[in-house]
Amino acid sequence: IIINKQYKFNFSHSRKDNSRVYKCTEYKKNNECKSFIILNNEKEILKYKSLHNHPGNEYSVSLSVMKHKIKDEIKKHSNPFDIKRKRPYNEISKEMGFIYPCPEYISVKTLILRSINKKLPSIVTTFNEIPNEYEYYKTERNEDFMIFKNSDLVIFQSPFQAKLFKKYNNNIFVDGTFYIAPKFSQQVFITRTYVKELNSFYTTSYAILRNKKQKTYKILFNKLK
Image (tube, rainbow, N blue to C red; front, side):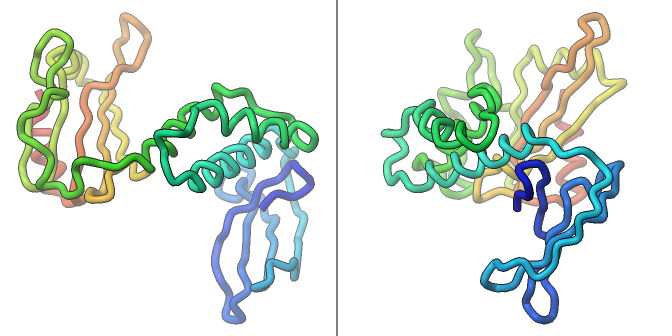
C-alpha cells in the first residue's frame, strides 16, 4: 500500500472481523515506525494512524510501484520468448512519469530477467531429474563445475571458487535465498568470501537444497573444498 507517494505499508495480519492490518515498512527497522492502516474486504480504509517518525522516500516508493507493475505485466504474457527485456520498463515508465519520479532501467533489470525466467518452461521438473552430467557443468576451461550431488542437494563450485574458499575461509558469508529457488527445492544456498587484498567479496559456491535440515548443511560444508 502506498500513501501520499512517500510511505509504504506491508501486510501484517488479519483480525477476527477479517479486516487486514498493514504496517509501515519502517516498523521493523531502526525507526520502529508505529504507523498502520486497516482495510476491510472491499479494500476501504477503516483506520489510518499516521505516526511516521521518518521522512518519506518518494524514490523508494516509485521503485516498488515500478517493480510491482513490471511483474504484473510479465505475468500477462503467455509466451515468455516474445517478451523484450526493456519493453515492459519503457511502457510502464511512460505511464509512471506523470505521477512518480521514474527509476532507471538498471534498478529493475534483474527483476525483469528473473520474472521472465520464471515463465520459461523448464526441462527439469523434479530434483531427481537434475542430471549428473551436463554440458553446462563445465567452465570455459572445461573444468568441472558441479562437485557433488545426492538426494538432498547439489553443489556447484569451480576450481577457482574452491581456491578462494580454501584460502580466504576466515570470513565466510552465506545466504539462503528462496526467491530464485526452483519449485522442486527449498532454497538456493550461496557462499561468499572476502578477499582482503582486493577489498572485494567473491561468490565461492552455489547449492540447491531440497530441505533445511541440519544434516544437509553439514554435508554441504563438508563437501565444499
